Length: 474
Image (cartoon, rainbow, N blue to C red; front, side, top):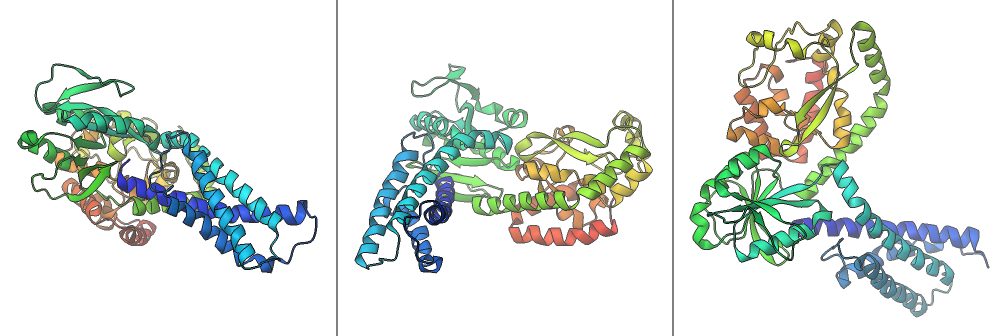
């Protein structure tokens, strides 16, 4: 698959193998000392130095033999052959070291238990990773959809590789042709299914109507001048673009070279591209959301009871919002308005204090007295910690818009959909609901362009006093 993705997966597998080696040695020591005890072991202190050796030796042999170079979950043999190769070489080296240096106090049975336990653990880990990859992907974000543009001979090979890597979360949406195409579907004997073919001039509508995360251009040099508008449209929308060419018109996107197997692709993106930092962001979100849900559970219960006893209607308010790439998800809030609030929006449209497609009223007559208090201190948004835990949202990011608001966006404003929406962002520090819609959009794009974990931390720390003092909230 893509080289950057391969590097991330390889490092995760290497880290997992090191942790499995540590866990396997712990299990082997327990087994040898408490279950199979033909004779007493030397004290545990004699084995402290060998634990780091085992933890380093197994991943080091794996790295040297190349099992982390190209992780292929679709290859049914490798989850068994890779661990077997590493275990046989590493076990031989470990026993050779004990004999060479005459470490007679080390139990050979313990090392044998460790070698078997580690082999089984590595095989099980790879089998579980392969089996659970697809369900976990569906639960935490789904597939990344690709549109393939062009009719170059390599296009069919790209389609085949994307199709083969569906277990890694990529899926081919369809094909687009630069010129007129006599066929409405793309067929190739190497592919498992056929794909719809669209004219290139329908790209704008495709991106707006469907979830398309990335577009790959695979065209001949003669078609290069026909793609400039399509490429700039993708950049404006924030869609990641990959080009199988050595040259392309100058743009402001971040540009880097990536390989799909052995085929070089220029990748253009106007959103953060570091998988490591984005993975760190997701890990922070999950951990903090989980801890806060536990710590604030008494407050959740109190607010739920107050909402129930002070007004009729459900405790939680559910609303469809647009998340990463335009994906629809349900956002959760404590209900702060009367049950008929959505039905009364049209009659209050003239009181809207926001420009653009956003609807806001500072003293909304639909709010309940408790709801007004909760909205002032953002207590109504606490259930969105569940959205953060699920991966629909992050702690920091552009606010998730309503689908009807997105329909009214200008092209340059749609790029904010290419970052996971959040509970707070730069707009929260500049006045929250007092901002103009255009300034709001500009701050979201500024956040995307400047994003780093340190920026997220700064925004969170600055948001805390803003929320506690209730500044700028309606």
